[in-house]
Image 1 (tube, protein in one colour):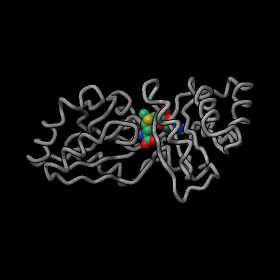
Image 2 (cartoon, protein in one colour):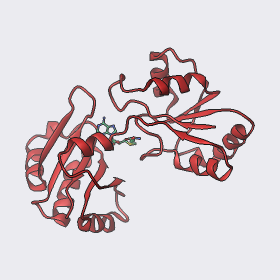
Image 3 (cartoon, protein in one colour):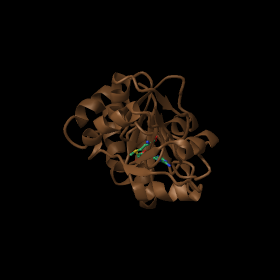
Image 4 (tube, protein in one colour):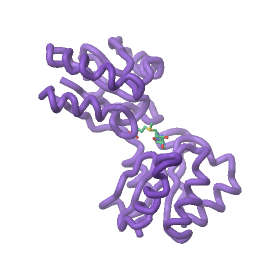
Length: 222
Ligand code: SAM
C-alpha cells in the first residue's frame, strides 16, 4: 500500500491526526530531503525508517519500491512541504503503483494552491493550476495559453522571478487583469496582495523587501 501524506507548508500545526498515525504505522517513509523530514518527524516523536525519494532518483528506485509494496510493505511518501505530486515528486510512483495494482491512498491535507485560490477573493468555483512556468523554452506558449483562459489560474513562482513574471503576465493578459500575490501562507508574515497586475507591479517595484518568501500567484480569468 502507498500513502501520500501531506505535510505542513509553514505552520507545523497543520498536520492531521491521520497523517501522524500513518507516518507512525508504515514500514518506510520516503522523503524528498530526509534531513528536513527528520525534523518534522522528531517534532512529533515519530521514529520512522526514512529513505530518500526525489527528482534525481525517482526513476531509478520506483521499480524496487513497487516490488516492496507487492511484497507486503506499506510505504508513505512525503515531500518537503505540502502534498506530494503537486509540483513535487509523486506522480511516477503513483502511476507505477496503479499499473502494478498496488493500492494508493492520498490523504487530504496542506497544499499551497487551495488556500491561495480561496483567500485571493478571485472566483474559485473553477480554476486552472499551472504550477511553475518553464524558465525559458515553452514559457511564451504557456503565457499565451493562460491569457486566454476564462477561469482564474494559479502559478507557483520563486520570489526573485516574481516581478518579471508579473510583467510578462501583464504583457499577455493586460495590466488591468485582477490578480493576487499570496506570500508565506500559514507563516508569521502571511500576506495577500490584491490588485490589478499593473498595481501589483508598481507595489513590488517599490517594495523590494516584499519580493521574498514562498509565493502563489493567482490571476483572474479573461
Ligand atoms: N507540494 C507543494 C504543495 O502542495 O503546495 C508545492 C511544492 S513546490 C516545490 C514549492 C512552491 O509551492 C513554492 O515555490 C511556492 O510557490 C509554493 N508554496 C509552498 N509553500 C508555500 C507557502 N507557505 N506560501 C506560499 N506559497 C507556497
